[in-house]
Length: 325
Image (cartoon, rainbow, N blue to C red; front, side, top):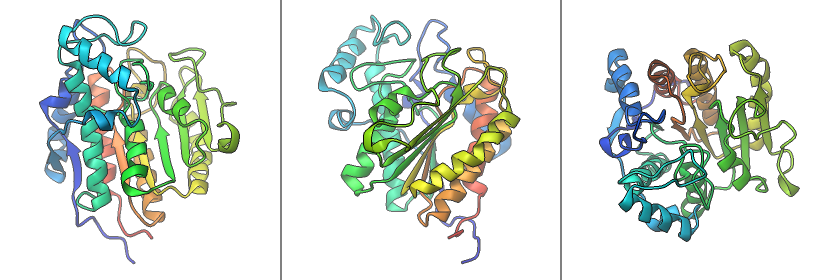
């Protein structure tokens, strides 16, 4: 089959329901982040090349595919008062935090289902990829872990087994990693700033999975100041690692906080690299014969980087040829 451009749309979720997932009082994860991406998408003309989807709110049952009922209830309670923290001090509650967080998860699930049904070819949710949340608590600005819910849903609703999760956010995706550390069918490739110098302090290269899952996780910590050259020296190893797992679905967490100039982190990747990673993962999904890839925005606290990095990812979803298999 010759390479062809997609006949079905690339879907992107945009709406105030997910834009509201942002913390008040000058918190670095503020409610401006979706707009930073979408403003740049309009400047670059990306918005005319995608199908815009409205946010969808996850049900309590869907949230409990990853989270404990007690924690979901805690978020509901603190959403009403808007007071206190949902973890040890990084993730404050705010009025409506439950609804905003549930829309993040529901939107990721909606695009997952659209990919599986074939109504969307590839998809991106900018305010999503909340990779620090644990089953029983929040963590690192992440209230509910949409990634974990998506992985469980792919299995429960669609019968998939082999899922690849790729994370290029500056922070280690600890909430995903430890939830699936013993699962041999979830292949995790995580590039991040060395945990000795950045929250959450995890993701050492020696952490490769437990028990029967040993060898199915690849952590690649990078020193502060590492840029594209350092990343690309290890990227071919990561691609081979993913290919070995023969994933039936690929999730990319493309946090823009690994791009040079982020105020909270110390890596120096380029927005161009984010696009290159997305292009290769789209090609891998095509090579696997299914083409299924869901990108999630993740972190990023420099508005210019958010716009340029996520637009590079979205353009990779749009422009990478189909039919490689």
